[in-house]
Length: 418
Image (cartoon, rainbow, N blue to C red):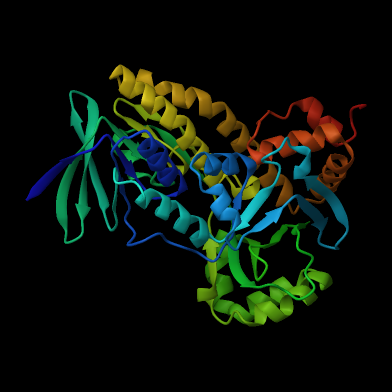
């Protein structure tokens, strides 16, 4: 038996972008239903970096102040070092205009809890957990709703003028639309873990780069600490067979200072269940919108996490899309052409971030000696050249993404006079 229900907007996927979109629309009085396959918000042992563009959106939905009162870590600087410990450059967020001239590192469950609580405050938002998307509903060539399988294997049809797919890299909504896309899986992903704060750790963010090595270390609160270790995805099974103790030895042996710092908190991680491997992807779609439907977040434009913009970009998608949706309701038009303003606004910024992340991937992860030489030269140029520093800062923060021209790259290598 199939039951039917009607809403204003249907959101597939309870990620940060989905929550933000639902909240923004609910503030304007629209009825929204969110569907997610999980039984509750999921959490992994990792840190979430909320960049300035994400902070701005969280302020827009009235939870930024609450978030800052939770166990989070605020940072104003990011330090890059080589594996020998020598400083390469420092990125200073204070160079951005206030009030969003900083970033936050949080545990996923902290921000998910706040987003969920904020959404539950609105009677016009319905949340369906353990709801599996089955298909799009069509009428005269346009999307008019979805069919989902809810608790108890019951099929339900939900109708709405607009369906939004925020269901990840392998989006079922995107597949249902038949939109051509290219999914590029990166060679390397990241093994991540959360542990107790190491003794004597200077509470700042540190990224270490070496020959095929990339390690991020950052506090997520005054008590907890996050590590992200670059790992080839085709070696995960092999490394796991070697055992978790051998893997911890790998981390400790990277650098004497890092090893001394991490040896004690790492000893508390006793099994692979304390770690999670996070693969990296880039998704490029021919279009993000169709008649009666739109894609957002990783479903439209996943990117390598080197720019720490995946979740922030999804939230910014939601902010822009909510305004376009309001205009669609005002005009009674949910056609592809009416929704295209959302894509026109967001695509240039997103594609600039994707390009930057892709370039950083081969540069930061390289094992090729000449590239390693070039990387250290570029880092040191960024540290000394305010123009280069602020350009990469504005891009990484999501405030203003600008392409890196040949002049910029030559300047970073000292091949062009400043």
